[in-house]
Length: 148
Image 1 (spheres, rainbow, N blue to C red):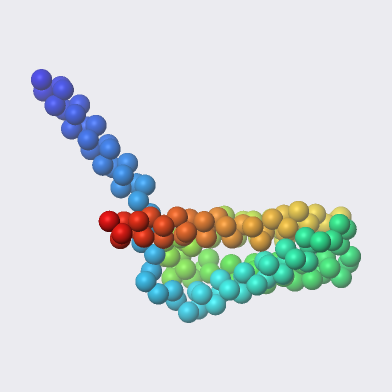
Image 2 (image 1 turned 135 degrees about the horizontal axis):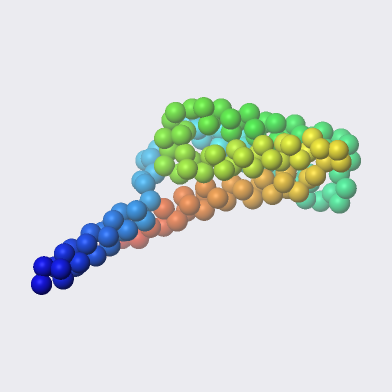
């Protein structure tokens, strides 16, 4: 009897822990203006990069120079965010920023190769979906919970 009770308590506690682990952290009520400005800057630069490289089959040297400049700007902004304690403390950005920064660095290295590889830079614009997809799911879950 004791073994059954102990097993039931253990099972119930594991279920509760699993539910707590699946719950996403809450998003801040109002975003920090500096953080919001940095995110918009990266969005503009990655969109320009996707547009620049998305249409060219073989980018010219001028287009490659522009792509390098855009990736450098995204790298500078992402690196500044990685060094900012407020950005690292953001529940969604803090989790996704290291991966995004690694993708930016990979795109930067690939564009510096001879011959340059533009594929990582092309994918850079879509990498924003990693964090923003998480944020959309969190907002959807919170909205559903609030409706109950």
